[in-house]
Length: 435
Image (tube, rainbow, N blue to C red):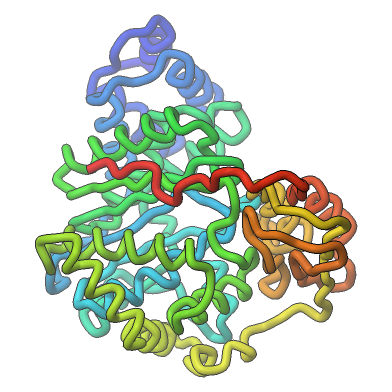
């Protein structure tokens, strides 16, 4: 078998065999296939696509390129959740405690943020002392003890994906549904959960800007998961405005705590209730949505979710006192008020520009090796369609030493549109559920 022939076949629109896909992934992971040939095949896939069987084979080959987590030692049916990335998307920090407090074992391997979308691991590591690096045995032990553990993804999990993603990033081949789907699902399959809930974001602050393309991606991933024996459900959710009110690492942890206390953004709360209800049914705790929703809402109301978050923090060596006193979380030296220059209604809050503003302040990474500042970011004081008067504070900018403040303000000026006209229809939070 020759890599030259595999490239030529895909270039000509032919279907690659299981053996050819496996040969490519194994060879590239081991360094036997050079970047220039891998790049050529990625571009051929980008232009010619892959069918359902090819995409599933690519997913399996990538999942098998490293270790798979054996969750067989975990009691009960395990669940996992993955988001395609958004702005102010703090769902994991709220959702996992709510689901775990209902008796469902949640196995969560998360990544770090890149670009303007936040990473769950970065957020959690803003909690003083919080540990995210575990052995597989330690990970399983925590799940069996408290029904939850949130672990940084090991380099041993789907290493082919890491290598290929870096190559896709510099060869203009990121926006390919088969490549996106196999990238996400290979990590989820290798992580070992019995059921997977996918949150596919669509809108200005999401990777997928178009609803039809988001549906294609969601359908593709659901088919992969179900065909590989993992119960998989995808929610297509709105990202035309930030989901939560806070954008930035310690600020999002604070909002998660406040949400579990019954405060925080109503859209963030509703997303977590919808996801949590689905995860309870996937784990076969209950058989209908009304009962599942009642359990999640009750665990929010009676603070079981909040207490579970405290357990998770304690188990992962963080300071549990932040739950009772969020002021113990690190905060920037300076808070700048961003005020309205006119009276009217907020007709647009462009999520991507808000995310980029936080990135300029130091809350995100432009390159993987960049260090983030966990204390900075933006907290919105208004939402889409809210009425504001001239001089009223729309947002608070958390900044250190003036870093990125000028650029952040300029982006907020274009991201937040105030108009005298009547408010427009707010996009639904959930567009579609694909099971």
